Picture 1 (cartoon, rainbow, N blue to C red):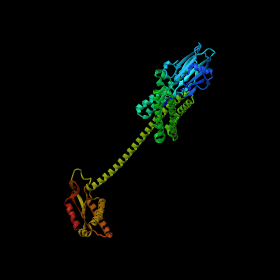
Picture 2: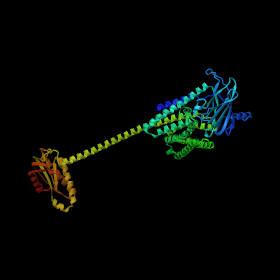
Picture 3: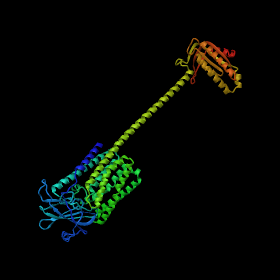
Picture 4: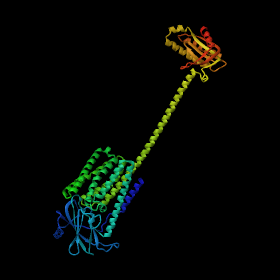
Length: 595
């Protein structure tokens, strides 16, 4: 789409350079006579001429309810080889909006022939089917012909005349060039409007709809602000002169609303410059009220000239600061670095300067230079279309960047989740391993699966008791007894593991372990003896430095043993046989600190 808009901008540049402005064959300077009441006849005008009342002056009178008589002296111009020898020339007023236009020319018999036209008449009553008010005149070879032109426009239409004399073929060629330029302009704007209307229907972004409405209103204002293109009047409403005269007022009404809304929204002025936006809203409201009042006055009271002029001047003062204020706010935002505001400045500066120039020329009584307004508006529409396309492009890039950032965040979150899952898995594995180790300390893994009793097998049992434990326990606090036994039995666990014994239980002051089960071994008796000696050595060493003195008895006996798990909910791994009964006897009756 950006390439399409660039192509349209290139076409605009070519048209602005290639299509020339109108060049008359002969520009006429008139003598003027004012008729304030507007009721002078041609005879009175001729008498006034004899009295020397005609004075040199500009044909561009401006806003005035008076009728003006203009006297022109026309001499046949040199004819080129491409043109016929027909003595008829075309007298061009250079105006589309004059309400009353009458041309008087000699009829060749000593009298005068009147040709009547004006914007209050249907298009079909014009002497020639042209956009401007053009009259055919006949001149004699080498002779000068005097013409009288009576013009009048009440109210805000004004008297702006740029009289020229054309050879018919030259005028038709120039009119064809002008219309080709208008057709190019209208085709370009229609293509842009259709493109962005479809974009709005597809994307549902209000900016695209506002652009289309702004485009339509600006094109309407460009085509109607100086009385319309003329071709539209001839093609679409030739019998509606009142509509033709008033259409430009309605165009100023919509052109003062939609472009302001579009630019304000596009540059974000409501958030950045709320006071300026408030002032713009007041001006838009005043412009809307004044344009509506002018329309009603034009339709209901067309003869109220003075009131029409007052409303027009008041509306002019309301209209003129509207777009300069808007453009000033956009320039300030652009100066702050806003990309869209810079597009708007580039787009609207030529159109604003052209509009200002035309407004000043109108006030000075000069005919409007329509081509400046038209091409300024075309440039504005193209650049704004590029701005919307650029914003759409950057929006797509921002969306892609946001999507990429979202994917990156999701990927990081996924990696973080995987890391947490891995960490939790490792923690669960470690906890499971601790549980397994604890379970294996209680239920040896060598025990065959599904069996609660194994044996009998040949093994050796070790049983330790403390001599005088009951007497010592009666004099020692219970928590201290528990702490002492915990330290001693913890050391015994280490000796049992070191010598290859399996601990079975520690009840009260008794500690029982065995060697040779659940895994059989040949040196089970030696293992128990080594463990017993280590336990005795540990107690002897402890008694040297500890205030509580313990006397340990150790019983060891070898014989057949049966092992297994007992219990339904809390399993206990235990041993049974006479060997267990026998080993308790030396442990109870043996000499302290011996085996």
